[in-house]
Amino acid sequence: MKLDYRSVENALSGCRWGQTILTFECIASTMDKARALAHKGAPEGTLVVAAEQTAGRGRLTRSWLSPAGSLSLSLLLYPSPDKLPYLTMLAGLAVAQSIERTTSLRTDLKWPNDVLIDSRKVAGILVESGMVRGRHFAVLGIGINVNVDISGYPEIADIATSLSDEAGSPVDAMALLRAAVVSLETLYTEFSVSAILQDWRKKLVTLGKPVRATLGDTVIEGMAIDITDDGALVIRQSDGNDYVVVAGDVTLRHAV
Ligand code: ATP
Image 1 (cartoon, rainbow, N blue to C red):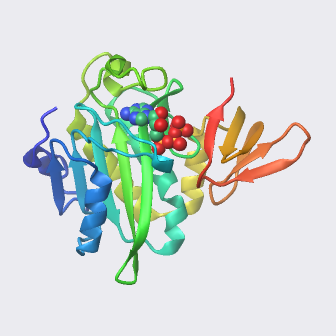
Image 2 (tube, rainbow, N blue to C red; image 1 turned 180 degrees about the vertical axis):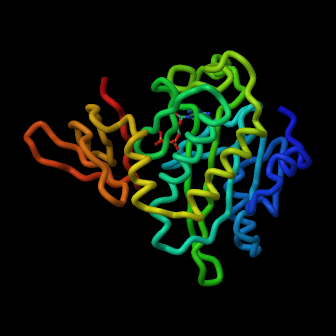
């Protein structure tokens, strides 16, 4: 995909966010760029968009592959601290909505931060936060496998998919970008925790599934039965005890 400033600017015309846009054909990490911009005082809604990342990252120092044809974006926000715990959910919902509004594909969410199509990961979310000049900032990172032939990437071929692989034809990355930014703006501006939680729960394919959560040496197995009001996952173990896991350092697998 050719990603130039003009097409991104056109795609985002009329949006409140994206008044400041940086576009890259290839960058190490959009997250690092956005974080650096926060420290330089960039405004809320600053967007860093790339067609390829060479050092994209996921949670827990995992790497996120962003080959040519994918879409990586990092959005800079200055949220009040009470909003921080909900940003991953909000971004997951926005990405799911944007895919469903621009393609005929249906998506699911996997706790805590993956967007799936048919159990395969099509997009990842990463929220990083910090303080700058006494203010909280958050960088909301989204990586979407848009027009990528996933079979060319053996390290993720078993667990991942792309929109073009699922749709059987190329997808309009700029329409998708616009839809994602519009959804993010709407969800963030309205910021209804109850609506976010309700819509997130509905899309969360994790609920009702047997799961294994790993936190360091600790492994918790059981049935994912609920989400608390701050997004933690409630796992019912076979002895009937409930265990609440917060996203933080937990790796979750759906057991089949
Ligand atoms: P997991 O979904 O495996 O539990 P996670 O949620 O803890 O991972 P993420 O930050 O969401 O971690 O994603 C990183 C993981 O996603 C990598 O370890 C790799 O397995 C997988 N991955 C990396 N790049 C891609 C990609 N482009 N598409 C889908 N999956 C990817």
